Structures are given as C-alpha cells and as structure tokens.
Amino acid sequence: MKILVNGAWRNTAGTQLSALLEELGYGDSVVSTAVNGEFVATAARSRTPLAEGDRVEVLAPMQGG
Amino acid sequence: MLRLYEVSLKSRLLLGTARYPSPAVLAAAVKASHTEVVTVSLRRESGGERAGQAFWSLIRELGVRVLPNTAGCHSVKEAVTTAHMGREVFGTPWVKLEVIGEDDTLQPDVFGLTEAARILCAEGFEVFPYTTEDLVVAERLLAAGCEVLMPWGAPIGSGRGLNNLFGLTALRAHFPQVPLIIDAGLGVPSHAARALELGFDAVLVNTAVAQARDPAQMAAAFAQAADAGLAARLAGPIEPRDFAAPSTPVIGTAFRG
Image (cartoon, rainbow over all chains, first blue to last red; front, side, top):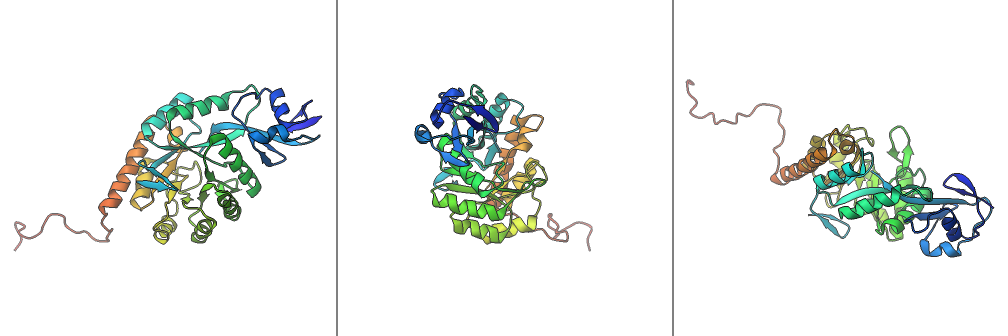
C-alpha cells in the first residue's frame, strides 16, 4: 500500500507503523513519529495500524534556534 | 540565580544550535558561552541518514540542558504535535513554543500561541512562549499557565537588537516577578548587555553567534555582555539627564572669582 512518509510516497508491505519504520531503515534511530498529524509514542507504534494514503512523519533531532 | 520553572541557572545566555559552519564550531561556541541551555529542533530524516543521531550525541556530550522548539509551525495543531514529538525524543517537559504567523518577519501568531500554550500547559509541559512585547498577550500566556515569557527583541535573525524599547520596558515593569528572556533579533553583545540592564533575566541568541566570523569568540562575548548587563542592573544605573552635571567638584576651582 502507498503511504506518504515525510512528504514522499512509499510502497510498504508493513501494516503497522513499527513495521514501516523497520522497513525504511530507521531501526534503532532516535526518532519521533506522527500519523495523520497525530503524535504516536514509541510504545504505541506496534499497535498503530496504517491504511492506504496515511501521512507519516518521522522526525529526528536537529539544530534549532 | 535565574529560575526557569524548577531549574536554577547561573548563565544568563541561552544559545541556539542552528546555522553554525560545523558541529565542531557549534561545540566550541557552546563551551565558550558557558551556557547551560541550548535550543534544539526536530526535522524530517530519512532512514539510514544519521545526521540527527550524530547531532543528538554531540549535544548530550556537551552536558547542557535542551529546550526543544516548535520552529516552523504555523498552526496550533502542528505546534502541539511537534511539542509532543520533542518531549519524547529529548526527554524534557520544556518546550520553546513558536507559532509563526507571518513569513517575512516570522512574527508570532499570538492567537495561535496562546491557544497552543493553554493546551500544552494543561498537559504538563513547561512552556517558553516566543511572543511579542504585547502586554495583553503576555497576560493571556501567564493565565494559560506559562511561567516564563520569551519576548522578541526584533525579527529572528535580523540582528537589529531591542526594536521596541518602550514596549519591552513596559513589559518588564508590568510583570516584575516573571522570568523574561529576550529571544530573537539580537545582533551584537551590547544588545544583550542592554537587555539585562533593562531588567530582563536572560537572552537567547543564535544567528548572531553562529554566523559570526568566529562563533566561539562571539559566544564568549555575548556571555560577558549578559553578565555585565546583569551586574549593572544590580548596581543601580543612574538616570539619564538632559544637561551636564560636572563630575569634578566645582568648589575651590582655580581662577574663579
């Protein structure tokens, strides 16, 4: 199914957010996630289902002012 | 000591971490500034890319407290979601809340800001709102639960200093007990000294340090200026006057009478 990840369309076999992150190589990276604009905590990723067209944000620490 | 929520700090300079020529220069500037708080952010990162991880390792090694921001957010929803994401990644209830209302000046959307502050304070965040010098907005932010305010000096990155001295002085006078941190727009250390002389509790500087020819030296200069401004404030500056007042005693002056 197609999921919009950080603004780019991706085809994924994963049906849970945790599976998608594994598939995209985030592995043990320190990242935070949101699905369709709603924050999803790390502990909730494995029970967060994905559906066609969902918008996923994967954010990492970055320099800021 | 500066008290921000339950945290006591010696340094009156908070430092941004963006726009440095390299991570090594950033680290040198943080050390030279003796700051205890740096601002950080969150950005999209693709799998396999490790820039964010490397940055986070660097900050942790520096041993400073982090203040995650919601930079780039233009709506309440975006800011609230970003705050939650930052709290998880950075492990702190602190959030520098930015809701941008206008792209040329990066002026805060104070309506969105007060609403986002209300939501986040109710959820247990310790909110540092990036705001204007508007007294009514300040009042609303405090009513929402903010215990610190961060009024702008001038638009972010502009280096113009304290753009509205009258407004900022009125804000300081109106909320004598509230920690006020001048955030944004400072260009040179004298701006920081001025802010502290006026009674502001601290300054947050990023571009003026990061884009200086020698960021570490400029960071040290800002720290010294903030300390000097605070010392001057505590020492009780004289009031300006319109006419000269001789500093050398005039009694007994030669060649008179």
